[in-house]
Amino acid sequence: MTIGRHEGRGHDRSESFGEMLLGDLLDQAHELPPDRVGLVVAGTVARIGGRDVQILLQDYGQQRLVPLPGEGLAGGEPLSVDHSKAGRCFLTSLPVEAALAEGVRVHVPLLDGGDQAGVLAVTLEAVDDDIRRILRRMAGLVADLLQTKNDYTDLFFRTRRGEPMSVAAEIQWSLLPPLAMSMPRVAVAGALEPAYDVAGDSFDYALNGDVLHLAMIDAMGHGLDAATMATVAIGAYRHARRISVELSEIYLFMDRAVAEQFAPDHFVTAQMLRLDTGTGRLQWVNAGHPAPMLIREHRVVGRLDSPTTLPVGFGGAQPQVSSVLLEPGDRVLCFTDGLVEEHETGQEQFGEDRLIEAVHRLDRTDRGVRAVARDLSHSLGRARGGATTDDATLVLVEWRG
Image (tube, rainbow, N blue to C red; front, side, top):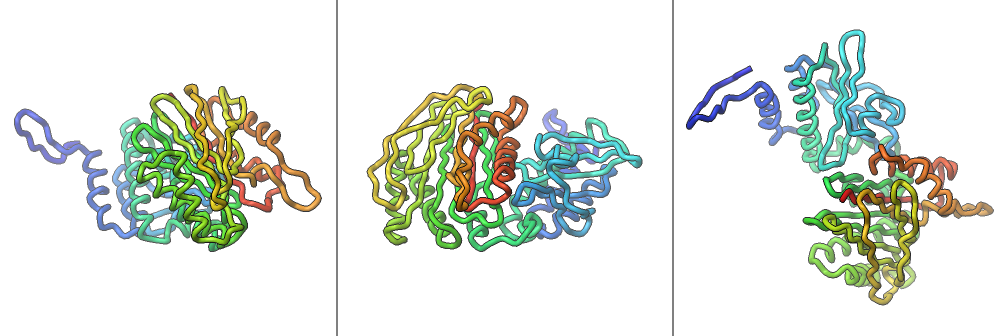
């Protein structure tokens, strides 16, 4: 369908139907109030014959997909990530279609920078490749729109929050980068438990050119004190990373920041890594943190043991840098001690052997790091009886070569 024709110098500059559709959505995005995103998206979908539009957002516990409320949107009850068509779309990052008596229900992933905020669900009389292409591109634009508007509102946060959240957890979630990133050479995915009461655990990453920077920390204690220490430690890490100091020197920045702000008996265990995504060279330093695990061909082949210095805040020596050359497809699992320890009186530790067993069961050829990290966290949580005396956090990194 041609809306207008402006030809010059032999080039056809006419606006196609798809361009007009997405262009209108883009033109409105600049000054669109967050609570009217659904109305505009539903109106755009209606122009291709779509109805019953849902924008489904992942809850913080990574268990459900929750309909965003708002004018123009269908609403409804939250859907299980593990037991729904929308959940399958979410976990695989691929469109999923379901035949209905009155048409077809199409689920399209809301992808932004490799992260996935949720799913766009639409009902149509019928679908063809043109409709699929338009919906895929529309979902990408909606994901970017949600990400942009998120900084201006509490609407999306409230939608994703499935239960009351502690103040410490509020601080930690505001500190975190997206839980997942997927790029041609590298993928990252993380998970935190308990999602609504996490305090001292945190992680951070950045992809600068060919280099992936990653840090994982575990601040001692619980509640606001631990969350505050984690904030200072991550802030110091980002500062050091952004002024491009050497990997071993990052520890000194973090150590000094924590020591200056907290009592002498306060500390943060930490692990900082750099991965050259062009060559697969992984370098890391350790400050009292559990050693990462190397996963090759979907089996744990060993721990990345290395010399360690004192935890951040104790004034330890500048740490030694260790390195290993990864093979394409290798994955590195970083985790805090809460993932493998159980401190309830009279109960033994959960242990790394059971963590390795869970990795072997869940890390399969056809599964991306985001689905594996999520399921690994939930599986270990169930094995601990759904409770832990400490935060339990993991980050999974894949070098794709």
